[in-house]
Length: 93
Image (cartoon, rainbow, N blue to C red; front, side, top):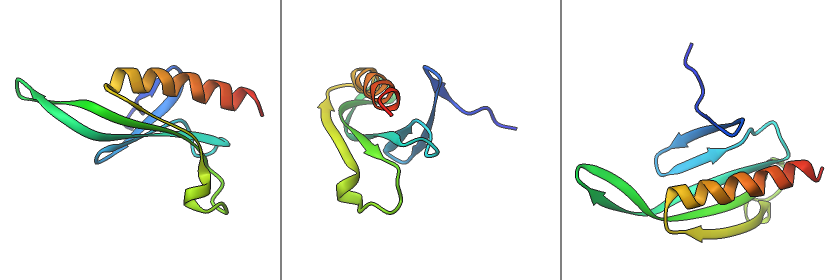
């Protein structure tokens, strides 16, 4: 069985250039979308990442799900903000 990648106790799932942080079973999830990258040696490194805190309720229209949105210049900065936003959102139930 494959181990799910986690960060600060929440799962990370990647599909192409989108990373979901958190569980769809919770009220909120974070979507990290890599908008731009640059080559560093033979690796693609994110240089522009969109971070959005979203409601997971399937009955809400996609455009109405976004609670908070920001853009960061690295994946590290994006996941840092994402962790804080997700913790605060899930704590304020």
